[in-house]
Image (cartoon, rainbow, N blue to C red; front, side, top):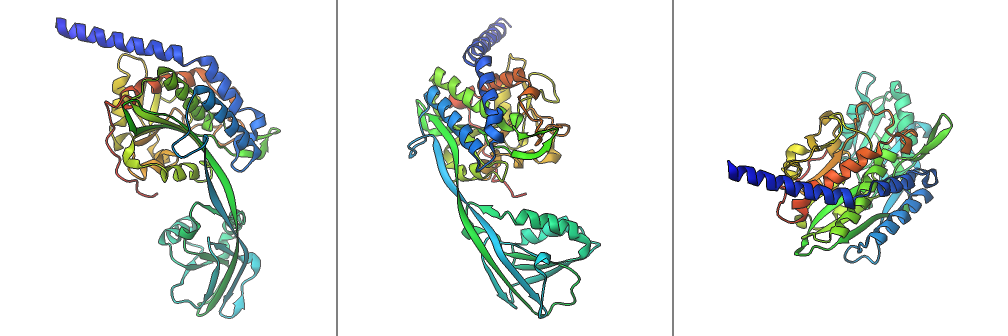
Length: 433
């Protein structure tokens, strides 16, 4: 009993010392300064492809430089540059049974030009008024087959909505690997026995950049731990009470602030066995393109864990000093984190919103897809969050104390992973949703 008591006392003492380091090295005032800067109106909501996201990128780069990070191997600076291709149908024509379909009653979902003339490999599908248009559309997309879809006029409002979306073009990292073309026609059509279809497309290269830096590991430099958040948001959107800037304070300036703060913390400690990468992803809001590209630039077998941080700006449903982990059951990542928090008041919980598919809706999914133990840490009450994706998600709605407490808990909870003494079990390659 005496030995047990002594051991427990030593553990408590060690935890207390670590907690003192975290409280000292993670400065609440600096956290507040960073998130105020990222959520300011002059960032214009940090939408992808806008001056606002460029300004945010420059700020994050300056923070990385002040922290003393170094660029990733092969990069001359903190920008991980890549490009997306925007493909926009410029001319769509469809003839069914020898009759031209009106231009405003036809649209194309394609990443390549089309020239069909009664092709045998083109499937014709009819969606009637009594069917579920969303379900049928998903089924068609998943089939990845050349298709002409005949849509009952009952779905005119849906057709026009999709028409507006597709008129903005399709964005992709790999144009040559895009989906098979699908052409939609709105109207009442008899049995189609012949067809001709042509689509011309315009392509444009769009530059993008993640902001990534690292601290090289002292004894296990070829093993990596990743801390990430996305720095893009929605930009200028439909006005609400005279405000049109979607500042994205919780989503995800809070996570980006955590990444910057943790970079400073670990650089001050300067004792990490494994190399640590700190990355602010771009283009999460339009399809997780930043993390998808990043996943092609690392060897997943060398990545020990990924801490993706998303929306930690308010207390979780479990109360103060708590957060949840998406995909908790997929590895022992959460158990390791909680073990390292023994003796503290903070607790990690499994994701309570499994019906929301959060594991698939953030940048962790890109790394989980290739088998990395990649999880998102969050505190957001997503089921009742009235500020999510609105202009009301701004600095004034944040609980900065909650952000600071969560960052400090992450810093403590990851210590054995960064030290190389714990490695979460691998995640089975992520199935598509």
